[in-house]
Amino acid sequence: MNYYHMWFNLKDSRKDLEFCRAVDAYLGLLKQEGKIEGWSLCRRKFGFGPPELGEFHIVVRAQDLAQLDAAFSTVATRSGEVERLHAPVYSAVTDFKSGLERDFPDPERAV
Image (tube, rainbow, N blue to C red; front, side, top):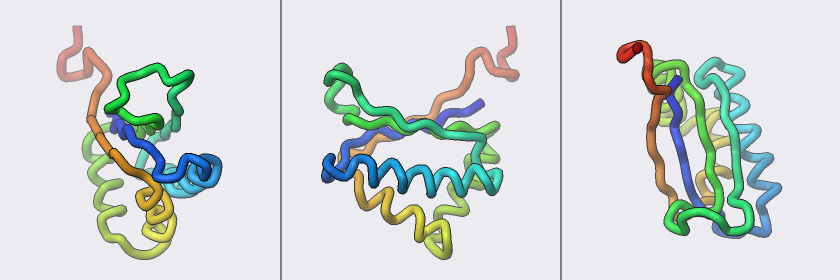
C-alpha cells in the first residue's frame, strides 16, 4: 500500500465541518471510481504535533503508484465533476505540505 500524506491548515478554521463535507465528496468520488483505495482526515488534538505540519492531515491510500498516478491524472484535467468537487477543497487550505510513504517491508523488500 502507498500512502499520500497531506498536512495543512484551513484558511478559515470556522468552516471546518464544511471542509469535511467537501473532502468526503471529492475523495469519495475518487474512491468510488477506483482511483484510490481509501482515505482518512485527521485533525490535531490539543495542539500536539509539529506546528510546521499544520492542524489537519489527510492520508490517501493507493494500492500502488500506478493507481495513485491514475488519480493524479484524473484530478489534473481540472474539468468536470472532479474539478467541481476538488475546487472547494484546495481553495480552503493553506500551508500545504505533502509526502509519500509505503508499507515496509513491501513486496519488493520482503523479509
